[in-house]
Image 1 (spheres, protein in one colour):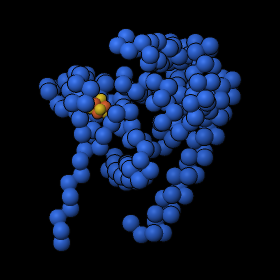
Image 2 (image 1 turned 135 degrees about the vertical axis):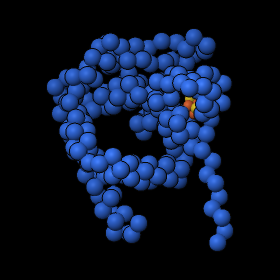
Image 3 (image 1 turned 90 degrees about the vertical axis):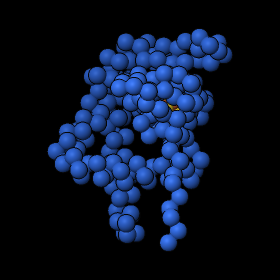
Length: 198
Ligand code: SF4
């Protein structure tokens, strides 16, 4: 990719990001919620059972612990999420969308226009765009030492053990088909093969 193309791509991503944030602000205003509240609900709607902690939220959203605590408090008071102690380690707090949170997400129109427009492009073009954006995201995350928060399908630890059954080599637990489509704090990209020397 040429430098000018890279800059154009960056500009487009930035502008889409600004529009998406404005969209989120609008959707939140209607519900008397701030964008950060909705971001937490979106995250919990996608996160797997190893990633539903306040710690994971601070890492994924790039927020401080204080902001996450306050946000969790507001959402719990509004009965949009529930907090519970991890059954294996009572010191760990886990978060889950409450029925109110799930229902609220269904009513939000944020991102709907984006989805409709993308669906008009051919599958091959969307796939190419996804590949490039994933690659950029992975490298930016690697350079900044940030967690990748990917899904099992792209994780080094994922093992397929049956038609709809998977095993996480890191957590040593079985994973179902729906679970492998969720994002994970422990995700590790596959080890890259070294390019043959030319
Ligand atoms: S296979 Fe990877 S992404 Fe999936 S649960 Fe295990 S560590 Fe997380």
